Image 1 (cartoon, rainbow, N blue to C red):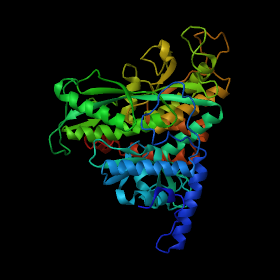
Image 2 (image 1 turned 120 degrees about the horizontal axis):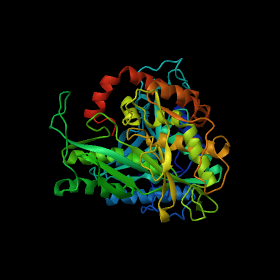
Image 3 (image 1 turned 60 degrees about the vertical axis):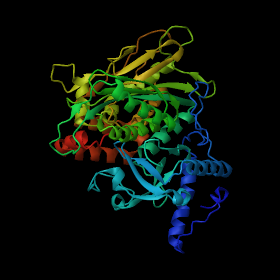
Image 4 (image 1 turned 90 degrees about the horizontal axis):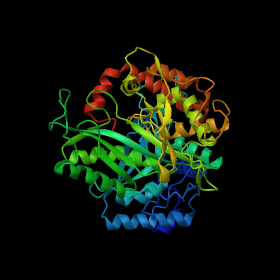
Length: 508
């Protein structure tokens, strides 16, 4: 490979093909323009991720040429030190599942410049989308390629894969536009909107998943059995390798524990600012699958009864300039502030549409009515202080400050969409006077102009998403139309998908 200082000076030649060189040049120029609107992660050289609450400002500065050169220098040192053979270029599909291409290490720098091409259908998932249902940029774009462009700050050596590293990528069309159905692009755009308003989001995901012991050959007749309760001498090795591996990829685990059922596990990440919390959740979904196989397990976000495990987004809003938690009251009373109530009001107002993105399958929605014996089409959206049974649980734990747990999500939801939709709904609450009582700051009351309900049927939740003008504008018309079309397609194939999800580990 050429010296790292030549990284940004290298031309886009491609065996004399001027047309392709022009296309790649446009892609690079467009990507540089687009990244100015997005949140960047910390320098790749800073391998110890900071979680200090003093660090309330998202990393929005666009890397300069010397910084990119420094990152490449550090990456080359890591590659040589670990004798790396391959680098995975990873992107998320609409379900939050990792789709990747592995590149021989000697071609890494070239692919950083030109990108890696991947069929668009790998990420958008509908075999034959209809032109009247989906607003494509080009009529034939579903069958075209997209370009994976790496965010170098996410480069990490993978402890569970031999001589392999990974880098998380943003996705672009071959003409240089960002892929409008990309969940990571949508999340970064919402975080940028939040940053423009003078705020930052400190957040962390809490995931439940199940570990199954299975026969060596997996087929349609496989009988899976939950592994014994964790934390005994045998299973401790699995969870230790998983947690240690996550740490070395920059995803810091705050705690882990066995949960209510045999083989059920809960992992809580340390809160981080910006896109990092969703990146950490995305990493877990890939890591838990690969580490489990080393111990002859498979892991699933479905429990043995067919329900989905929970995927909680714990978050708080921070003022960028004053570096303070906007949910915390200075009065010493553990209640939400007025901005906190407005943010919560936004979440309540959009809860029907939010549930479509956060519980995006029929099995996911069973958990909303699991304690109800009445046959209803919807259930009230609940909230409360330190009440884990509520859809929105306001945690007031002293020094940790006040935060809101968005518990609408299932573990099968795409973490980038959960993050993006939560920010969009919360921002709408901040900018609106609808649904919040302007009373004493220590008041526990929160009045809504219209009580919010969560639809129990996925098709009704899809209608709520289509009718929610705020989320349509925030997430993008193209994404909404495509997501709805995809979910309708899945509803038509629900039975076969359930088998695929449980035994072939797709949602993991």
